[in-house]
Length: 377
Image 1: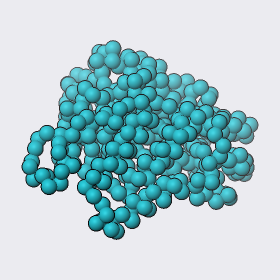
Image 2: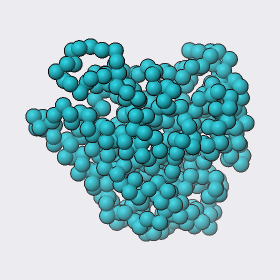
Image 3: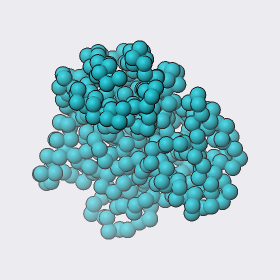
């Protein structure tokens, strides 16, 4: 269990911010690192050509450590949608095959697949939530010889419903289908292992559970797809790009591994240092310990909310860091505003009140949340 890390964040004592799934606050060291990086742009004569490569390689390696993959398998991207579009541009699918997504899946992991299905003649199939909320069973039952791609999260973004990706990945491989993951709502807050799950592509934006800045993200690309087509034709992804004096020696050769998929201007001197600093903290705490700590907090919140008459899923059915609470007669129309008026910050997604704490939360935040709920029920 990790003690509260609120001292690392600029969060006033009277604020109960339980909305990390919306956007995480930045740690003070992350802000400082990004500020220092931004200041370098004010003195560009201090920035050397090698600086375009050192921090990006450091970030690539840190992300690889989080997922259990080598740095060579990691690309730097600006968003989840960028990574998903890259996967859609490289995975084969034919007429008569199926692309599987979940009902109410986050749009970044939907639109590219709708377009690919329309272009290829494949069926875009949306899987429906069953009454028991068991997404894993629904997905496993849907996978067949017709399945070409399953595009999934680790937990559903509306309420945290958990998916057994190891089992799903195993069945997809048995029929020759690809697994594409958007882990923006889980990576950093719970463990994930590339060797165990074996995704074909996986993307994660930094601004939620990686505790990093907006407009930064990372993508894992399995070695079998690393000769694929990038969305951009950037100079820095070309072989020999470290030698600025020879950039006019145009070449079709590319940097090794997943680097060919890097976004343009990946060497962001303001944002990348912040992402690096955030991942260093996550690795120091470890996703396992973060998950255990947040699971204890959401479990406590769930037990207290149930006593107020709210509905909560079993702990085993949801991600530890994610709690979706439901009101028996439906959520009040002004739920988010009413809670914010009492300095309690949560989200509403569909009919679920999403409570998503992090290490900056305290027992006082839990008490404030329950008190605010009591006042509006």
